[in-house]
Amino acid sequence: MAGFFYAIHRALRLRKALESTVRSAHWDALLKKDIMVRASEDVCFDKFWKACYILTRAIYPLLKLLRFSDSNKPGMDKLYYSLHQTRLSFLKSKDALEDTSLFPNASMDKTLASDAVFSNSDSASDNEEVLEEEGDESDDDNETATLHDNMLQSFEKRMEKLSHDYAILAWICCVHPDVRSDVKERFDKIHHEDAVERILTKLYAHVVDANMAEIINTFWKEWKMFVQETGVFSKRNMWNVRDALDGKSTEWHELYSRGRTEVLGYVGPRCTSALTGMGASERAWACTKKS
Picture (tube, rainbow, N blue to C red):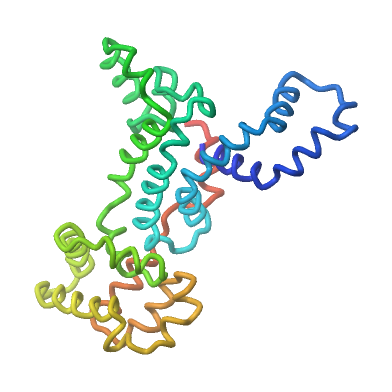
């Protein structure tokens, strides 16, 4: 299903080429099928492109996150940040997504509820059970649900599973300037500290007689220097290198945290080096294989 949004994004980039094609003499001379005629009408319709733009803008942070997943490169440190940016993007696009002149058939009905994109369930059997339970409800609620409501509801359902402890630890260890600013703005000592300490306990589970109280205390002292760019992280050159500006957290921690810090140098490269997906080829195969 991700290919659908990729296709919309690519179509926006190729809009001028597509419009030139359907207005050419060669196109007029073709013997066109009905689907080709309808497609050419969409290409010449300004509202079609406006709807594509609004939809792509709303889910653009997710598209960037999907690119990380497809790249087979470390991206765990951007996961938690991207989820927050997606939610903000949905809220900013609320009025446009609720425009019925652009999205006239976007209210939630039984057909749309069973679709994999907007369903809150994780399997087809779960979808059927939900539909049976809601069968006696009034259709008025379905008619009032907007595209924005459906998208946000579906996203927040999955956001709970993606906002796991490991993603939070990688998030606070990210070196990308935008993510670091996000950490300074949103770090919650109660919620985020508990999540980080749970992962630290797991990462040091193999250490016999590990004093977790001291390990955790050392980590927070070193992380404070990391955030404030003081102590062993006070040199300006380490924050102006390409690895930091491009958000290559794993390589950066390997060079500047390991050997200079006791706990952060061990945790940083490990938590930020995790992949966020299985790669484009494997994901595409999973969509087409029969099971």
